Length: 254
Ligand code: G
Ligand code: G
Ligand code: NA
Ligand code: MN
Picture 1 (cartoon, rainbow, N blue to C red):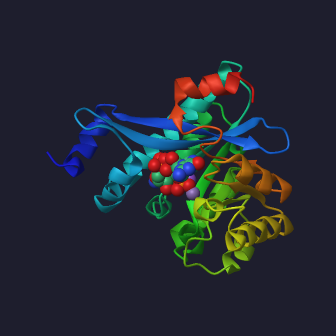
Picture 2 (cartoon, rainbow, N blue to C red; picture 1 turned 90 degrees about the horizontal axis):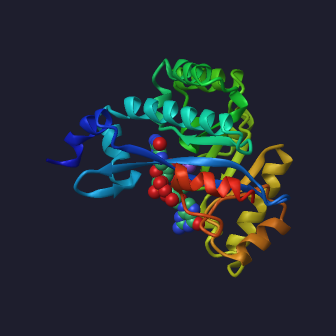
C-alpha cells in the first residue's frame, strides 16, 4: 500500500508522534521553549520524517485533520509537563498554510488551550513567510484571532521565501527564526555572517525576538551570541527527541 493511502489509518492507529527540540536562551543557557516536530512511526518503514508525508497530507486534503491532532497533542503534552512541575517553557508548533484557510483554526486552538488549562502565551505558532503574506480573508482573520488569544507568532525559515519585507510592518510577529541555510557557514562565510547580523539587527529594531536555527558548532554559537541573537536551536544542543528524552533535558536544567 502506498504511503498516501495509509495516512488516514495511521491517525486512527495512533502512529504519529511528536518529537521535541529545545530552544535555549543565549543569556541564561536555559531551555525556554521546545519546537514540536511530527514523525510517523510507520509499522513497516520505521520512523518517517515530515518530508515523507506532510506535502502528501496537504495534497490529499488531510492536513487539517493531521494538523488538529498536532495542536491537541502538543497542548496535552505541555499541560502534562507543567502538571509534573517541570521548568516552565513555551511550546512551538508548525502549522501549514492550508490550515489557515480553514475557518475554525482559531477555535481548534482555543479548545485545545482550554481543555488543557493553558494560556495563549504558552503556545508559539510557527508559520512561513508565505502565510503572513497571504491576502485571503480567512488567513487574515485567523492570524488576528491568534494574536487576540495571546498566542505567540514566529516567522519560520526567515529569509528563504520570495516575500517582500512589507508584511513585517503589516503584521506584527513576535519572533523571527533565522533559517539554518544562513547559519550553516557562519562565521567563516562573510556574506552569511552579514546576513545573519542584518536579520538580528532588523528584528531588534522591530522589537521582535530572534532565534537562530540549525546551530551545530560552538563557533556559530559564539558569533550569534556576540551579535545579540536571543535564542538558539540546533544539534549543538540537541536533535529533536521523543517526549521522554526531552523531559531529561528539561530536568538537567540547562
Ligand atoms: O525535523 P524535521 O525533519 O522534523 O522537519 C522538517 C519540516 O517539517 C520542517 O520544515 C517543519 O516545519 C515541518 N514540520 C514538522 N512538524 C510539522 C507539523 O506538525 N506540521 C507541519 N505542517 N509541518 C511540520
Ligand atoms: O520548521 P523547520 O523547517 O525550521 O524545521 C526544522 C528542521 O531543521 C527539522 O527538520 C529539524 O530536524 C532540523 N534541524 C534542527 N536543528 C538542526 C541542526 O542543527 N542542523 C540541521 N542540519 N538540521 C536541524
Ligand atoms: Na519550524
Ligand atoms: Mn525553519
